[in-house]
Image (cartoon, rainbow, N blue to C red; front, side):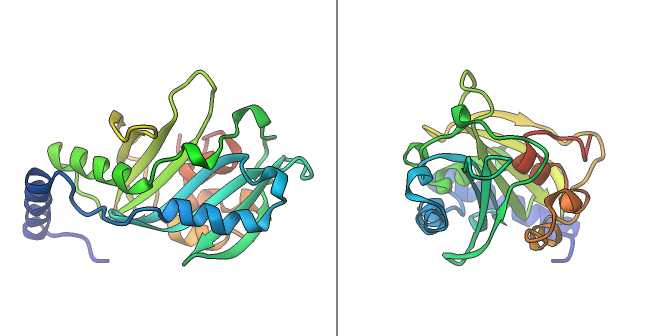
Length: 225
């Protein structure tokens, strides 16, 4: 996708703002895709761990996620994490999440707790329109980093690969909780390229996919800091 020029970017902002004002929901009309991804991904793991999810990471457009990376808690793996990539409602790859951390059963969550990502994406769109943030792709991270912290979607806003910040959405009611601006001039330039290397050693892909996917696999963030 070519970078927006001034006119097209201004038109994009105006159209999005109008959509939000008129309908309350802009682009995010796809519902249940994360639910469908879970139903598909669970086939790759044993029945006893199908409701023990460590984290979810999605890549897509402002209104829909095309790829879901789901990590299940699996004590049979040294890291206790088994990652499953779901695309087009099919399992593309499965892989031990050997990102340098050991996942805890205390931080797993049942997929039934998750609302559809559609309202979360819409909430992020509304926030972006209100604050004049242009973007054309998203990441969506959902994990429970601490049992005492709120359960939230972390929706990353990217414009042609450049990080425009993160909108934090409460996963239980889809309300906007916070906005985290991009760190200085750091960029996340090749999320798609890095994601394609999912079958390779995850550690080797970190520099290509940026901090979000490192955080997804390891629970730590060092690449873009």
